[in-house]
Length: 286
Ligand SMILES: NC(=O)c1ccc[n+]([C@@H]2O[C@H](COP(=O)([O-])OP(=O)(O)OC[C@H]3O[C@@H](n4cnc5c(N)ncnc54)[C@H](OP(=O)(O)O)[C@@H]3O)[C@@H](O)[C@H]2O)c1
Image 1 (cartoon, rainbow, N blue to C red):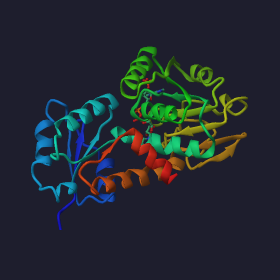
Image 2: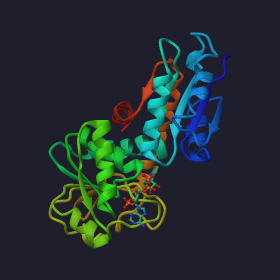
Image 3: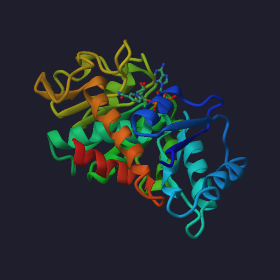
């Protein structure tokens, strides 16, 4: 039986333990991680994946691109795909810091709770991998999207990267602190919190009586949670008349989705899992 090999190409210096574990749980027989991978040094790694097995066995080799930097991950993923030609290719997935799978799980659960088309959505701390992908998926659902950052220049840089990849520009908002973020969500119906681990972005008092907010999702599972007044385990729970989803509430779907996508990589040699089809997969599982 040909072994299923998953090559984890990480833009960070050390390959992710999380992605390694989920690689095995998704069905790989071996997960081999490389850190510090860049477009400049990835060529030989891709060549090793595409030239070693015959047409019938190639589907059992796959590439997973990860790491903490979405823009670096996108550039690396592009370089990987560029190296493929004819049937010298293997299936590949991009999920920098769980960006696609986490955002897809959160947005799919929000969309399951209520239609998002035409709604104003604010992605708090939308400059990280998860936030940038959440912005794109909210746009796919037809929402009008804004992203916040503590610094306007970072929000604008992420908005430009989203424009480059997805062809739309979210509104870039500077929100330096909790007061700024409370101001940023005024008039929005959807709030998606994508801040760094352990950072509270919005206090309960800033959303509980808000007249427009209908849906809230928070990705940060480690106390302090990203949104005050929400439990991590909330999954489409009603609080103060709003539907809220906590990080563990969406985390189950995220893990299921991540495993499922890894499993699918080994079904043929020509699959590409990035935002659009990972999101489609999330909608099917939600
Ligand atoms: N639930 C799940 O299954 C799951 C899976 C994966 C990830 N996650 C979580 O999803 C969240 C987002 O992940 P990520 O990798 O995209 O995050 P990240 O890159 O570490 O951080 C996202 C943004 O948070 C902002 N930030 C950092 N420190 C801050 C502070 N002290 N105060 C306010 N804002 C701050 C930064 O934005 P600016 O510098 O631009 O302000 C940063 O770009 C994390 O909490 C992660 O743990 C959850």
